[in-house]
Length: 197
Image (cartoon, rainbow, N blue to C red; front, side, top):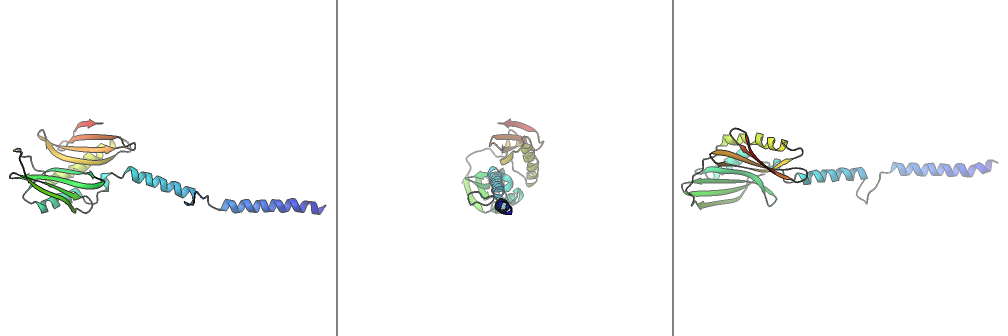
């Protein structure tokens, strides 16, 4: 009678041991590592992809870009100031003019290396006012206001120029669905001039 119980007990012991070993091993997913690690990596990649054109990635600040422009062209008045992506590269695009000449300087927004420095004769008789360095301090608050308007949005670029007798900051944004909205602010008063979806 004892011999009849040996086989079922032995089979049960083997089954419990096999299940225990399988449970202790992490779940594999196509040789890519564990399933939770792969999910975490996918979420990280999505976040990086969503913000790949976020201007917050600029390592060189706008004041340093202003100084670099003045180092290159001390006699020129800076009349337009822009931070945006050009062919996947984050750049400062700075325009200036003086005495019948204009200049377009493009700087890498990470190390301020010169990408472009073109000096030309200016055929336009209109003289734009100059941007002063202290004006740049007002930009960040308005960019922040624009991205707070829509949940999950971020800034993809901005430009400062003189238009209709006032300094206008245009801020371009995207949300998580890649929907673009542009905001125009009066730099001096902070007033929203226009929101263009």
